[in-house]
Length: 240
Image 1 (cartoon, rainbow, N blue to C red):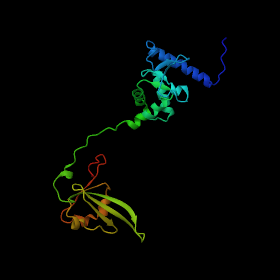
Image 2: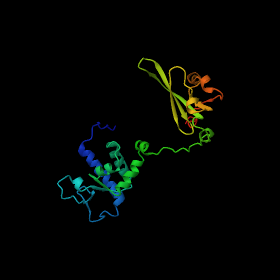
Image 3: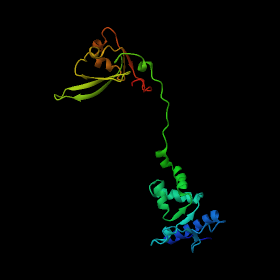
Image 4: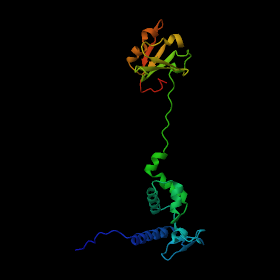
């Protein structure tokens, strides 16, 4: 009967040794034919290919002065980049590239990092472009020849409270053709809009049957009755 080994946490030395073994296998798979790529690389005592940078005279860690050479196309390298990307809270290309170069020298690093980040689902939500919908043509009442305030849209703003604690509303009249605006304060009866802005013939609103009471249609209609129509909320272009 085989005895199971007791579970224990790995030490830092064991993790570093395992990482070096994996990186050696990656280098042998990609650089087996060219172990001595150029005069700028050398083999360290652990049989790892390292790059001679321009800061080798600096008093710093060996991994910073001589970063480990890694290929651009390998699934282990992609996993390494993505792990560092998540560790840095989904950092961008420049931050990720600067951090990785403290230990590794990845060939075509910018292009490789960009391809890995492009597959990150969380980052894709913020970089994807929204769908562009084609605008529907405007209805005839929005583009035909007409007088100002002949075709209007009506809406309410409020309630508001005056200094004497009286409740009031603001009725907003918008011309659907010329984009002119007229405001009326609703305290009692509505003032006659025809006397101020001309005779409107068609009104569009989104307040249901209450608009008839608010606008006091008996005063507004006069000789030429207003054609009242409600807004279909599936057609946002109708109300302007």
